[in-house]
Length: 94
Image (cartoon, rainbow, N blue to C red; front, side):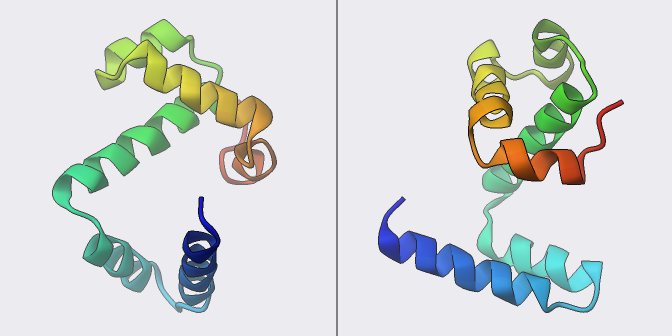
């Protein structure tokens, strides 16, 4: 990520954190995403949610219709990326 992209992402996070309700946050996100990008984001969310719940990667691939490669990337983010710190706060492990 470039410095400029990081600055923009920080601005967007700040804007979202100041919003008063979920509908405004949802509309803000939708305003920036194409339908395909929204689908990709939802798939990624579901993938992480299922990984955090302890589902096997092959089961996730079958249920979501995504590749093992995508799941491996999500798993790596859980283990080594910034997701390692933030995802457990958002997705309680079952």
